[in-house]
Image (cartoon, rainbow, N blue to C red):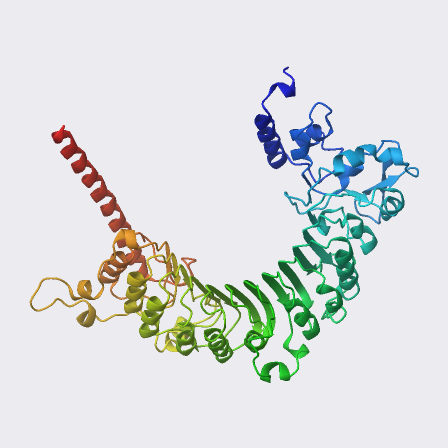
Length: 568
C-alpha cells in the first residue's frame, strides 16, 4: 500500500474534503462508529498536514476532542433513568494533569467550526456530564478551542448547558455564534455579556428560544431586553443579529440601531411594549439609526408597528429586503406600510418585500401597490396570506412599467377549507385582474420567473377573440402580442380558483405571452377537491404547443444543416 505522502498535496486535500462531507462521524457515538472514515482519518498518525487541517476543521460536537484525552481519564458509564433506554455519560475517572491535554492542544487549534453538518432527529447517545465541564473549566486549556470561528450551542453535546459551560468555548476568534435559550429571561443577558467580553470581533449572533429543551421555561412572553441594551453597543463588528421568540423592547432596539456595521436584523416584537409616542413622534432623518441595515425580518402582532418603526427609527438608505410576519393586520395597515416605504430613504435600493399574515377578505390592494410604484428596484414581491387579493389590470400595467427587473410576483396563497363553497370565492372577487394584466407583465418584465395571481379568465369571445373586419388576424393576436422566447423567463404561473370557459383561446394567449410555459397551476393544484375542466383543457393544449415547438426547432436545425452541406 503506497504511503499517503506519495500523493500530491492537492489530492490529499480533495480526498479528505470528500471524507469529511460524505462520511461524517455519526451522532450515535464517536467510539461505537468504528466504520466511519472520518473517525479513522482523524485518529490516524499517518495522516497529517493537509489531512488533519481539513478533517478537524469542522466538528459535529465536542466529543472528538474529549477522545483525544487518555483512555484512563475519560470513561463512559451507563445510567438507567426510569423505564426508558439507558443513557451513556462521559465522565472523568480522575483529575487531569497538564500532560493529559497534549493531544487536545494539538488538535484543538485546527478546529474552526463546531456545528453538526449532518443533523439527525436524535442527539448524540454519549452525553458529557456537567462534572466534566467543571473539571475542564478548572484544569483544561483556556479557551478550550482557541481558534474557533463558528459555534452552535445545540451541537456542543447531548444536552443544553449553562453559561459556565458555553463560555469555555467563547474565544477571541469567534465570529459566528448561535445560542439556544431554554430560559431567555435569565440566560440571554449573561450570555451576551460573556460574548462581549470574550469575543469582541463577533460578526453574527443568532439567539433563539429553545422551546424543545427539557429545561425550557414557558410558554410565556420573554422580554429580557432592558439590561440587554447595556452590552449590545460593544459589538462594533456585528453584521447580523437574530433574536427570535424573545421580545425586543424599545431601549434595546435603540441600542441595536446604533451598531455601526449591522446589515441584517431578525427580531420578534410586540406592539404592546411600545408607547403611543412611538407612532406619533416627528420623523428625524438625521438620527443615524441602523445606518448600514440591508435586511430586516420582523415577527410582530400589529403591522402598524413596522410602518411606525420604518418612519421614525430605521433610517438606512441601503435597505434592500423586508420580510414581515404579522398575526393581527388588515389591508389598511398594509397600505400605510406601503405609503411609508414609498417615502423611505431606501426607496431606490429596496428590491424584496415579503409579508406573511391575514390582511382581510376580500382584500383590495390597488391603493397599496400604487404607493409601491415609487420603488424602481423591486425584483421580488410576495404576500403569503389567506386573503383574496384583488388587483386591477391598470395596477398590473403600472407595476410592470415601474418594476422592469421583477423576477417573482407571488400574490395568491388562498386555500379553501374542505367544506368551503367555490361560489363564495367567485362572489368575493369584484374586480380581479384579467389576461390583459398578464400581457403587460409579459411584455415589460422579461426576467419574471414566477407569477401567482388570482385572475378572471371568463372572457367574452366577442370582445377579445373576434376577427377584425379588414383582416383575418384574430383580434386577440393584436391585443396580446407574442413575446419572443429570449424575452420571457416565466417558469411558473398560478391563476386562482376561477375556471375559463374558452380554453382554446386562453391557451393561445398564454402560449403567446409565455412561450416557455407548458402548464398553468390553478385551484387546489389538482388535489381533486374541485374540478376545472377549462384549465385542464388549457394545459392539454399547452403541452401540444410545446411538442409543436420542439418539432419546429428540429426542422429548423435540419434545414440549417442541409444548407451548410450544400455550401461545402
